[in-house]
Amino acid sequence: EAGVTQFPSHSVIEKGQTVTLRCDPISGHDNLYWYRRVMGKEIKFLLHFVKESKQDESGMPNNRFLAERTGGTYSTLKVQPAELEDSGVYFCASSQSGLAGGNEQFFGPGTRLTVL
Amino acid sequence: GQSLEQPSEVTAVEGAIVQINCTYQTSGFYGLSWYQQHDGGAPTFLSYNALDGLEETGRFSSFLSRSDSSGYLLLQELQMKDSASYFCAAINDYKLSFGAGTTVTVRA
Image (cartoon, rainbow over all chains, first blue to last red; front, side, top):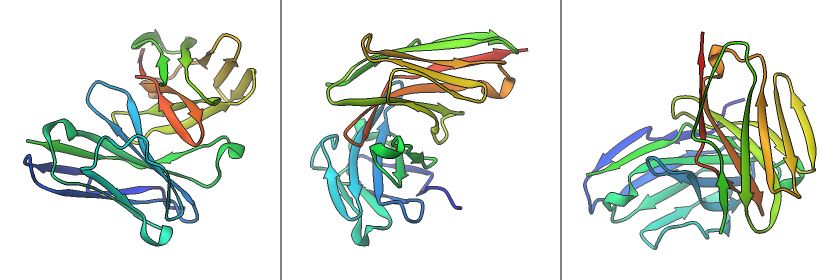
């Protein structure tokens, strides 16, 4: 079974540019999450999809971040325009069940974003 | 808000036992999970405690005490491959709130 995949693995852009990150969850997983780790800090929740619906986007930093999951399969996270403080590693995770299953989330390898 | 505290680093020798403590302050707490991360790669699920007590999974065990708002991860018979970062994560609703991670270094 393929795991969670993310593209690109690395992205280096200049301040003011736009970047789109993609996540392909494990097939059949309705729950998809985005997290971010800024260097030296903890991994922080950004948002949660159930199928194509945003269940919780309380962690999104501001309106420069837009996440979509059209069709309930893969998801994209767009940052426009990017700022220096957006640099970090963006992780995507998916899970089949919610709390009943222990909420085991399967993480992708992350996208390392560097904004210059 | 959510707050989880865990030690920043631990060093031990092969074959030893390491305990990583985690204390939490969260709202809507459902349970405590532990994740392992090698070299900044994908965090990997290790264990989950929804109820008080001990959960054992091979060489790793995890414990939760809701009355103390704390838990720990126990790594037994340490091996070199266990050198990694270990994160406790509180589950509230469907999302994970992570601690800053504990770097475990295993020496020969």
